[in-house]
Amino acid sequence: MGKVRTKIIETAIEPEKLEKIEKLEEAVEEKPAEAKPVTEKKTKKVGEPKKRSNQYKGLLELIDKSKAYPAEEAIELVKKTANTHFDATIEAHVNLGLSAEKSEHQIRTSLTLPHPSPKASGGKPIKILVFTDKNKEEIKKLGAEIGTDENLKEIEKGKIDFVDSSGTRIAKLEEIDKIIADTSWMPKLAKVAKILGPKGLMPNPKAGTVTEDPVAAVKEFSGGRMELRMEKSPIIHITIGKASLDNQKLKENLAALINAIRSARPEGFKKELIKSVYLSSTMGPSVKVDPSTLQS
Image 1 (cartoon, rainbow, N blue to C red):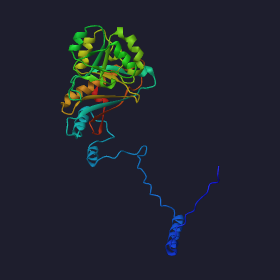
Image 2: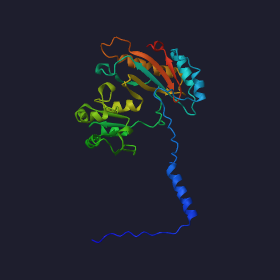
Image 3: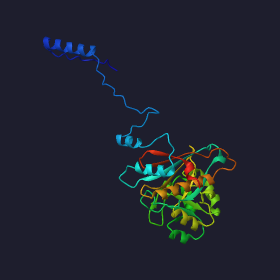
């Protein structure tokens, strides 16, 4: 290969202009580019109290946080602080003296409130999936859907896809409110227990979702029967009605809840079962209730 030759092209520049260019180059080299100021993102610190509106703070002033109110007063107060433009939902939160880590300390039962109210979804019927070979047509007439082996295969894959009796396409397990089964189907359902369990959908005799009379179970749950299940906290959350419901009826619903929890006390547990009871409305502050005013 031949020698590479570099050809230098010289351009004639007037001396005065060349001097200006050289000074500009020197200035650029000496002065580094200014970095843009970094704006720090405001992050909420752990334990930092949630910012509340002045309206919410005003509602808080109506409540004595150091006091456990009699049931009647607590209901009146929680309805007074239900400051929404719609019919607020009233929830009960029951803190238990149990240990969530101990299997013998679990509470799982069912309850039909004396005065059930429509679901917050607008009164639509709950979606129930029933695994049974009995009275299929009657169950469908009640608005429930019959589960199949194909559904179980779908659940194993982490999904479910079918159209219920009302013509609504169900694509997610989260869209199902309740799964009921008779004992003949339980060995098959046991294979998907790890999927259904964490979602609160695994049928259980204590909750009334494993039964030899699925027709009766569908009627009960469609009519307002609810499952009570302790969370890891350990705590039980449940809706006891709407703010528009009569005070006495709300009290009777709350009393029925407390009695159901007391009836489900784990065998041999001698310590205090119910540590505290709170009522709250949608987006409203909580009110502590004296459980002794709800004795049966």
